[in-house]
Image (cartoon, rainbow, N blue to C red):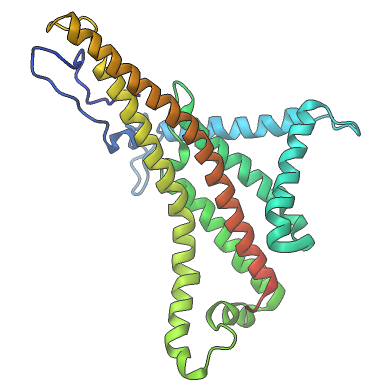
Length: 280
């Protein structure tokens, strides 16, 4: 995971003047393997490969845990049921009530899929979270945005849905010229934007932090330093500290990956529940 810009063989306490080069955002812009030559497209990149792997892993999870369901669940089936119960009890029932049970399959699928895409950043050889590219969270957020509007319009009609989102109950009429534009921008522009950016920004920053620790550990490891064995030993100590930090933040990042999947699904459930309810 060390920076591609890191000079070959460059370590701390060297005698040829090269210093530490931290990883840059180039990590998140892999060169395309195949270019389509179409505007707005990046061709076939590592992101596509990692996305395919994440999709296959998500599908395999459900296939192997639910292909032969039993009344007395197996261990694998119990894991799947645990996910479903968690999403139902901690997310959909709290935001939509029992009426939201029909959205449980969608929310469970979103949770597993997003978490799997996030975890790709920790898999050796891949080490690139799909959600660190804004395009992927944006598509998911756009889907929820369209579903939110579709549910609201279907249940309450076009006028009632948009009125509920732009005209808060109890607001005096003389304040509506100020409140309505604010509510419209907040609900129809800022909401989907922040829904996507929150997931993207956290995964982007977390992966870059891990890359810095990995590159620092590589740079600081120089037991054969030409400046002497004492500094060589110090370099090993420094490298060990960087490695420890990398491991600690890896565990922390795994937790954050699960939290971000939860937050994205929770907000999606809140939005749909709001559309089902109608007026404020």
